[in-house]
Length: 164
Ligand SMILES: [Zn+2]
Image (tube, rainbow, N blue to C red; front, side, top):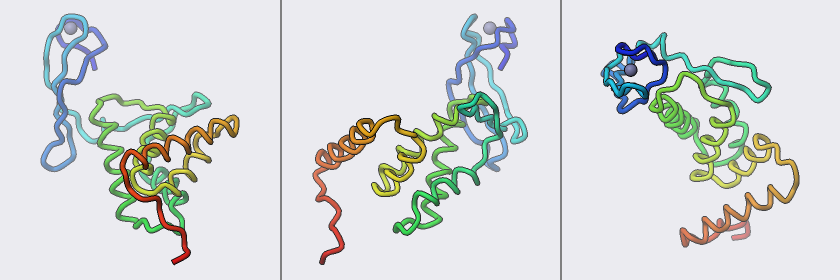
């Protein structure tokens, strides 16, 4: 977003607010060079997010793709489609609140993992094992240990096995 005063190309988003109809976003921006503050109203068609993939190519942000990936990880788990949709909505809102038009696929993956981690550990591990493409088993074990520690901190009992 170009500064209207000095034409500098980099601005910082101070505040984002989605309009009542949800089709535009009002942003307070500050120029990183001259500190000039201005407001932009961005319409839906201007809000297309580009996703930069690992191979360097770009793709348009797609809710459906993320929903599909999460659904695969959540197969046979007690997670409803509504929950998955809510996760993706929260992820998309977070990305958009940052005001960039571009996000890397790995950042999206991290956001998904964060959500799954809070929701279902099995789905999380499944997603992580596909998505993170762990180079060595050590890395994966470390990830699992991280999960365990978190659970201990939360002082919740471990999930019961199907024995009762
Ligand atoms: Zn400026």
